[in-house]
Length: 131
Figure 1 (cartoon, rainbow, N blue to C red):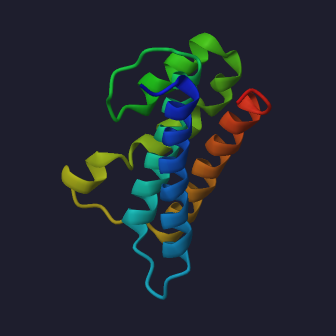
Figure 2 (cartoon, rainbow, N blue to C red):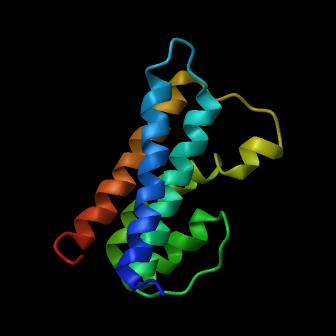
């Protein structure tokens, strides 16, 4: 059976793989912007799930970042400063892959990456020295 820190680290490892995917794609000659945006959302979502797991806050396994940020905010009010970021990123979840055809611009892709990094850094700063 996995301990809580193992679960948290698994969430963060998967989130970091999404970040690596983004960084590799941003270096490509032809940048797949929807892929960058999707993985930005996925990374941020996994960092939120890792935080909730660390705090032992139960959550449904959904791709709804507003739901996740609301749970995190109930525990730590500082998450309120990320609500607008989460709303922007949430539009790039699985919906972008299956619900409609939309190709984000390169500017949107780069912004989504910056938002994912912001959420990663925020979560890790809250947990610094605790794991």
